[in-house]
Length: 170
Ligand code: SF4
Ligand code: SF4
Image (tube, rainbow, N blue to C red; front, side):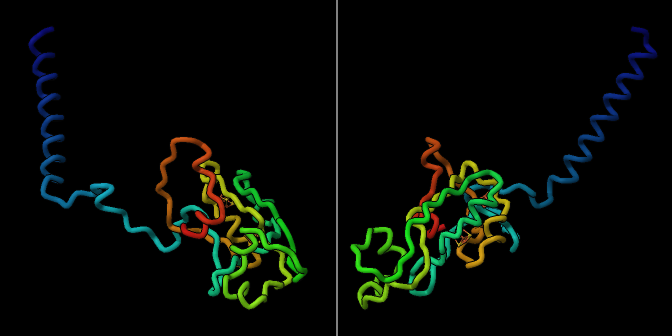
């Protein structure tokens, strides 16, 4: 390499070094843009969509009437509903799920015939869900809505399937 070329490459290296140094010093005293996750957490926007959750009435009964619309519209086939039964108040032994669908107060007072269908089981596979919000949009009962929960870890695929009890708590 001749002397002229060596000089040029030295100038180029020094120039790039100074540009880098300028960037470093320029940001050194600024507040970091990164978070110390999980101690520090991002403030989510109001319209942030986490995973869907199931909503309940004030008396703790399920709002869902097992109309299947959300299952039908879900683009990733993450929702699986067993529509179960329509309670017309006929005499029968209530299953555990049926008891869950009606508030304990209603059961105690014998008023369990709301004439609405309820899901016997309602599952969402969080590993399939893409948090698109279609289920919330289509639901005629406001029975499902997007929560702000999005941080989950699973060891098996089955752990990612949330049933009614877990979906209510999201
Ligand atoms: S948010 Fe979208 S992908 Fe997730 S369960 Fe609802 S419809 Fe399916
Ligand atoms: S959550 Fe809403 S859309 Fe889905 S089955 Fe229940 S009532 Fe229908």
